[in-house]
Image (tube, rainbow over all chains, first blue to last red; front, side, top):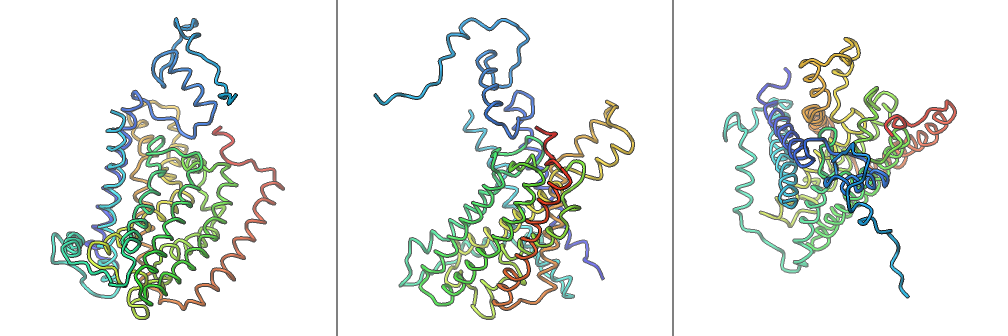
Length: 86
Length: 349
């Protein structure tokens, strides 16, 4: 005698709840990222590029084909230097 | 706005986890009942599905009793620490590509660290209760958790070696071609045994051995604070099953669907069917199904094996599982460097 179906019903609910939760999370993450899937395993270079995109287009996921930087771009680019104590 | 989104994301992960905890208890009772030729809970709700909620309501409405000589702050803090750190592990779980709450570059280490801190909750709860049963239970549990954490972290080292990353999504994506179960099958068995011990489950449930220690480290905890321990225990069971499926079964990836795609050469087509297939191939349902199967095996193991003695538990860890793992820790890098195999995720970089 195997495991009856009624013992497997809770597993169905577990699968359902995780699927609904995961799908909801997927939808929220996508909506929060301007309709694109979030980047993952970002390193320093990726973060730097996203910051650059933010300064050029106004959003972290924005892309621009304009070969000229927007006005003010060069001014909003202060060198990140450590603060001197003295 | 970003705060609201963060709260929604947190709820979308925590609520299903807590619902699953409730239904894992029911599934455990129903599956074990069927294995022992009993009916199991069948009175509350459809086929007894609401039994867990009835139990939770009963526990929450009960009066809690704290021992007079107990250290009250630590007595209440212990279960809270255990539950919080059991749930924190869900932060780095990927449900699909890019679907996570937090994308730690050291995600696997984060999970290990969080599960290690949860041990303190057990230790504090057992010590603060001022009861010999609880103290003995917490000592046993702590020794067990620390010993088996060594096994788990050693196996994780090898997974990290093969995938070349500590990031959880990268580990999953590295398994698109073949799941790590195939090259690391003996280690999966070791890891699964370690998982059972790490979650204090039968046959390694010496920490709460009812027949010897009444209820182990939670002997003096009752009513609503007992619920915290209960939730933490089952939340960590689900979490470790998710970790097993991520490390060895490809997490949210469906290996079968990927095989169909490559067999039928669907990758070139851009039809609705192809889009549907690509969604199914990496979706949360795959992770949920794999996790549920592993939870079932957890229950199956509990129903099948008798509890072992404490010295046997320790000798299995230090004299059997650890030498096997260390042998693999030596062997696998030799094979990888001898055959000039690159870590899998070189292509993903």
